[in-house]
Amino acid sequence: MHRSIWLALLLLPALCACGERTEKSATGGHSEVRGRGVLLIAIDALRYDHTSFSNYDRVTTPKLEALFQRQGVIFTDAWSPAPRLLPAHIALLTGCDPSVAREPEIELSDGTRQAPLIDWRVPATVPTLAEEFLGQGWHTAAFVDDPALQDRRGVDRGFRDFQAVGPWTDNAQFLRGVGQRFFDWLDALDEDENWFAYVHFNDLESMWSVRWNRHAPELMESFEPRPELDYVPPVAARRPAFFALPLTRVRAGAQALGEYEADYDTALQWLDTNLRRLITMLGDRDRLGDTTIVITGTYGLSFGESGLVLDSGTLSPVDLHVPLLLRPARRLGLAGGQRIDQLVSLTDVAPTLLALHGIKPPRGMHGINLVPLLRGTAPLERDRLYAGYGLVDGFSVITEEQQYTFWNPRSQGGGSALALSWYGDSGQEGGSRFLFDRRKPAREWLASELEGDTQGAAELQADGERWSALMESVRQVLHPTSWNREARGTAVIDDLRRRGLIGDGL
Image (cartoon, rainbow, N blue to C red; front, top):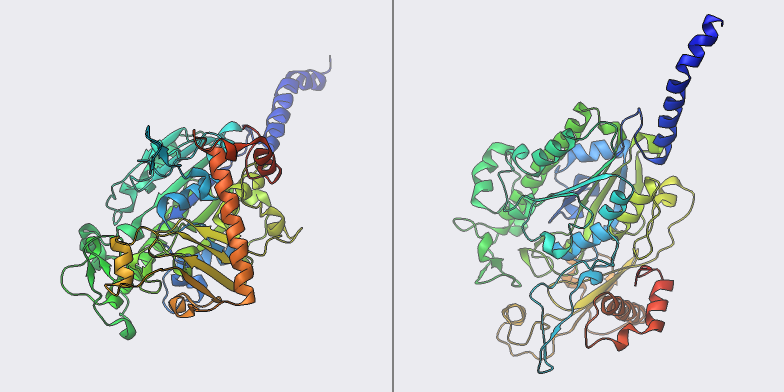
């Protein structure tokens, strides 16, 4: 036999194996190329209008701005569906409106009902981003920076490794916290394995602690307080409260509100440095090119613009308008340097990440797959967003030009401390508030309150009420109880399934 033919026969099995590995790579399995990575970074209390890419007058996030303007996508009109920690994270992790995780009241033996001990829990019938990746053979892990995000809430579903780091660690030494735990986990994976990690930073909520204050002078030059915020806010006996500083966030000595805001912006600049450091460390490991990175705020923080001081929970742009940044992996072939101004929601993140990596988003995710928008193949079919689940009852309907909000500061009860902090001792009855106007800067939100109604406001109010009723139907279907069986009728379930609001497993 000719020597060249003999060598070809000897090499045939290896050539076939090589071809097999290349084929598996196209379907997301092991390959000679590096495995694909998805890193979703969620940051609490991060408001859009305090970032550099929002044309803020302070340079707070220059490193992220430079990176994503060149290599990524900046969404300028992204909104959270909820202004509080648990429902906001649930929206990110499930791609669903947070209503899917609201526990119903408990019916007692005498027929009365009371609020459950755990008010937020993701039921097993709700899809999750981690579960979908895990089902495709990806390694999944979460590193959360607040003990409120516990596994008993159901947010751990689909994560093979779930580490709750809180209470807050010394993130002035960044690598001792969630960042170091993420890299410890990543370094243990083989280079050809696919992975999804959820990394949560609570720095901007925890910065009011004594430990952060001790390190703050070492971080970088602080910003000068604004003269218009040169007043000391009153202190509330308990949290939450309107028009007063929570006692848990009071600094030593009398500090003006402008000093608190300057400290927040300094902390944001420090966080910007650490996030860029994290991305650089991915590059040092030769992981960056094959990793899709999403950085987003979960909700914002108010400096009095919405009635709260150093707190969150209203339905204003302060709490709901958040940054959303996407840096796609190189192999996805998406153009960098995009700036998208259309309305998007945090619920869009899960279906978009799945679709980007060849996984069909499951029925029951409420968000929209943004891949056609990113590739320029189809427009975004959406003209409004909805938000709720704040400190008090109400909802907000957001369009590209307007925002209508209905809320009731007395909804926790006429004698509650929260309601009294809004109304004082005036004895005012009622309490429903209607805010409707063209979208304004966050600082002018309360000034847009209207006593009357307009045709546009009536339309958005009716739309918001329909949305609230629809989400209540979803909630009752997903959380069956002995007293809501009628609401779970076959016709209701079929209608919700047809709308794509629940999955097929019910």
